[in-house]
Length: 327
Image 1 (tube, rainbow, N blue to C red):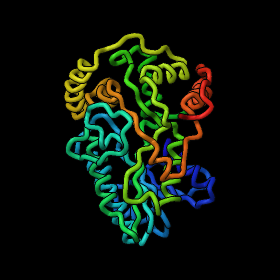
Image 2 (tube, rainbow, N blue to C red):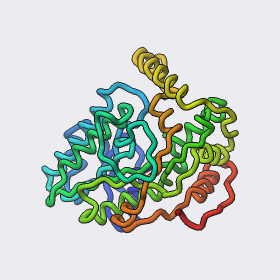
Image 3 (cartoon, one colour):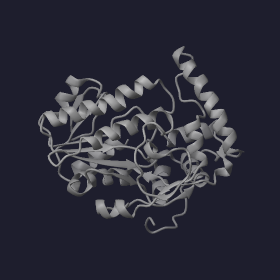
């Protein structure tokens, strides 16, 4: 979803765009090179004769074997960085995640803390943190590396958050944690894509440091989930679980789920993990002043407008708009 939106934004600004991914589908107007970031030869083909790289590829999952995250998120990033340097590509944008600096406690109005591969929570966050460290270490005057951390990106067609929320709410498997009161920032997909492209266009100012990107509209997580459920035409969660109970249960369930994955007994994500419980029961919202100043960017689609677009996509109901623009 986000990669497609970034490619569309680049096309709209007049760039020639090559996409590199494993699937067959592509965006009209772009050139496709099929392959994986784990394949050095395929990476070299994708990098050939380009002027800049925007790296969004990652294994995104709440569970899974550590080696799988290493192969895609860490080694894949290393392959792209090395290939770009060898091909004299001057500019590289690495799309990271605020989870690389989320250590399990609340984040309240903070900026972009340092990525911590040892203390980040879960295999995804730890591997993305290690990849971000690699990317920033490669930054130089003749090889500028910008790092953008969009936070909880969502929109129509989102399979990571929106469709999981809708599916689990439909079947009554979606609880709120601590009543859904934790205040969180999210990012509508069009805003995230525009910020990533701005990081490329302003790379002289953006390279060498991470920037967290959000809508700048912290909302209680229960309110956001209720809006997604309404847009998807399903009932909002009707029960709550204490956060500490969910975190403890998530730890146990995650270990059991990994064992079941190894045996082929399950294929989907577990209903709860410790990382997910922490995300749903702790505040995490960010100071956006530096990001907006450096990028010369501000979101153009508010949370409420995003929910209207979500409802149009899924056929549910839309909220009443109450903001002219994001705070």
